[in-house]
Amino acid sequence: MALSVDIVLTPRSRLLLPLLGTLLIIGWSSGFVGIRYASEQASVAVLLFWRTLLSGLILLPFAFAFGPKMRLSAVLPQMAFGVMAVFIYLGGFALAIEQRVPTGLVALISDLVPLAIAALSQPLLNERLSGRQWLGTAIAVAGVLIVSFDSLSFGTAPLWAYALTIGSMLVFAAASVLRRGKAFLKMPVHQSLCIHSLTGAVLFGLCGLYQGSLKPPMTREFAIGMAWLVLFATFLAYAIYYTMLRLYPVAQVSAAIYLSPPVTMLWAWILFSEPLAPAMFIGLAVTLVGVWLTSRG
Image (tube, rainbow, N blue to C red):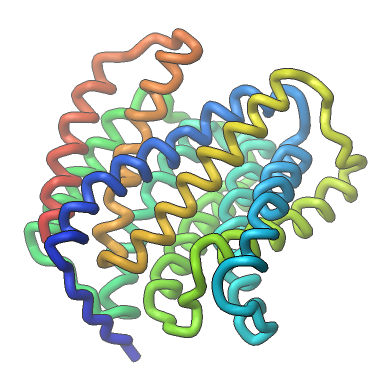
């Protein structure tokens, strides 16, 4: 049964959309930077454990001091969404890469989250996209494909690893849609993000212990990577994303994620001097048109 959600966009919320969308793109794409710094210093499980643990611990005093009292009946559903949006989403892609699913293919599938959200929004939330928005979605996907084309390959990973990549993307899309439609999940962003992060930390910690150790490497690169992942890829990206889900239709919010691949390449060019291919600029232009059409609805 579809759940109808009525969203009233005030002039103020309309003006906020471009600003929040820009911050979301910056935060979402910046995860590459932190991983680039830290991934050569530790295993994926250790990296994700310290990322989520530090994020949760920093937010914990604020979660208790500000906002409504966190009762168990409210915390448990948030923990379930932490499993979906943090542990399965981040861990699934990381495990797929460890199983040698090509990074370019993993990135492409992860950036198709908005397409899955658009497909799920109508049956679950009754948030229907107009014909123009579906056209914008198709154009944005084409732009992502153009940007990602040079790095695409299929590799020799086991079949289940490819299925895990797609499944992780679909789980995050479903979590985004369900979070938008459940009134009992309306908890202040800093509290819900704290619970999600600590839930992920427990699960990633168990994975790390199973593999051997959770001891972090005491290196400058790992410290920079952790700081970047916590401040930008967690606090900025997730906090802005959850805030936008309260203000705007979920398909409109997620459309900004289509711009993540070209912006990620810009990060790589600015910080690591990686070359920019002409296809990036073409794909960026195409994606901008698609996101603009989708966001206008």
